[in-house]
Image (cartoon, rainbow, N blue to C red; front, side, top):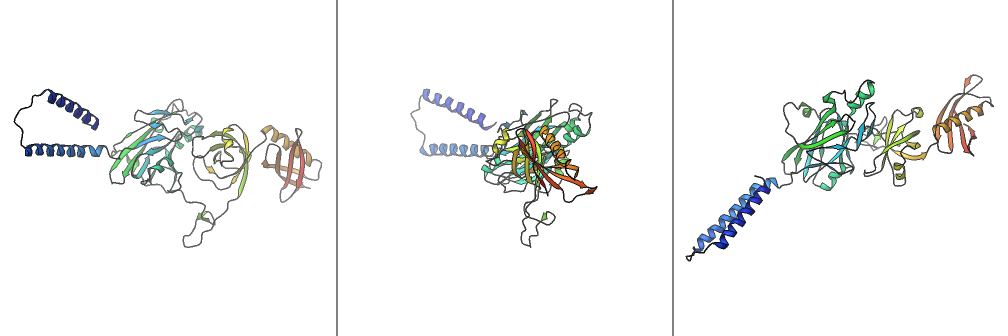
Length: 408
């Protein structure tokens, strides 16, 4: 009998005996004082016993899971996640599942993902973080106000690879093992007690994801839980030489990364996050090895999160935090000219060199804004490649791209 039913039963029992007591005719002979005292003591003992029975059920061992961004509880009944989808071509939009735990006095949680991968991000920057991992342990601590900022992201990399690498693959044709996954959480509380929870995830035929959260009993078949924990993401920016961890016995050397410039299109955002975030689709000719990159925006840059579909020029550091997609350190963001304008500027630059002693071997976009484009030019003179590359700057004046500067 749970505490609620017990309370209701005691309530009914109490009212019954009160009613009987009202209509009962008292006997004239009184019971001795010691009998009354014994009855009081017995009642007190019952109260203590009942409290002892109910105490384990009313303690702080309740843990819940919530979708990050919407704060919707993930229940045992489950629900379709509206934060992300995937197509038959393997293109993923948004985040399929990002969640956080809520509870009291959680000491540690060990996460184990069976088929796909998970990332852990600590927005308080007090704990080790994990990327593209399957097993790891996180120290939570007594400050439950921090739990909201400890987020777990489920990343279906195996699904993405299968759909992108095989043209004939579709979501409906994927094996059940690939379409379904589970994240088991072994939770230890500050008082030493433990509980086990799990989130199950299913990929629906329409590309949406269904998730539920419930108690879990680990069995001998759950061999994925026995995998060793992954290595935490290395701390930055304390690095030396070839971007290795600094020797603790030597003075720290802070390496300032170089900046790179590329163009791309803002294709998504995460408005409900603690900081505004945009996802940029990188253009093929930008010289960047990533297809898509995430960027956190400052207070001055936050208006860009609403400009989905805008072609932009990004200046960022050349060191990225490895995740899926990678996270870049944004230096500046400006609106770039449309692709057709870039083509017109390219033609104008080549036409300029036709009237010089140089012959254009190749043009590489160096920087671009809505009104100014700069190319790095590999040129030859009398058949000899000139070094270093020359630079040509064009500016948009009255709808025409004009050369305003050229040289080294």
